[in-house]
Structure formats: C-alpha cells, structure tokens
Length: 147
Image (cartoon, rainbow, N blue to C red; front, side, top):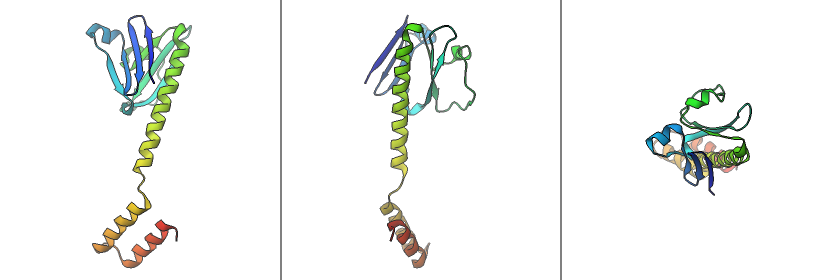
C-alpha cells in the first residue's frame, strides 16, 4: 500500500513505514519528514471554507483536546494542505491511516493481555515463594481455568 499526494512543491507519501511529507518549512531545508504510525494518535481531515483543506497528523504527545481550525493548523509541523482537486485523495489517505492506527492498537491490546497459562504460572511462582496460600492459588486456578 502506498499513497502519494503532490500539491505544488509539497508532497505527502503514505507507505508501510509511516507518513512522509514535506511542507513549506521542510522545502526550505530540502528535507522530507517521517512520522511513524506508532507516533500518530489520529488523523484529522479539516476542510477549508472554499475548497481543499488539511490533513493533520496528531502526534501521540499532543495533549490538546480542542479541535484546531484551518488557520491554526498553518503553524503546525504535522499538517499537510491540499486544494479542492485533491480532496478525494486526502480522504482516502485519512481512511488508510485511520485503519492502520486502529489495527496497530488492536494488535497491541491483544499482545498485552496475558494468557490464562501466563497468569497461572505467575500465581504458581507466588505460591512457591510463599507470597500466597495454597487456598488462594487454588481459587485463582479455578477462576482462570473456568472449572
């Protein structure tokens, strides 16, 4: 999967490793910035009044809760502006990045949930160390195994 959106000298590329873009600030430095998916909290599609709009890739460390308008986003590093011709492409990119973020969150949540066997092993170690009683261990074992 790869999306590319060019607007004048600005470019936005979405691929398997993250979001890569250059905006006015980056072009002056001759660089392209990369924002890996694990650093993106959300993607906001902000339409402009007449046409076009902006995709704002909210960083995981951005604690603001108030939605940002098109004017405020002009000073943001993680904002990519586009014209009316690119609206459909921008919406596809937003949907794609939203899906990737959701899949990664679901995978992380699944991986962080310990299995019953892991939990049982942990309680067995506590029993062996004398931190819990045989009765407490048996109760937890029954609960974990659904007996």
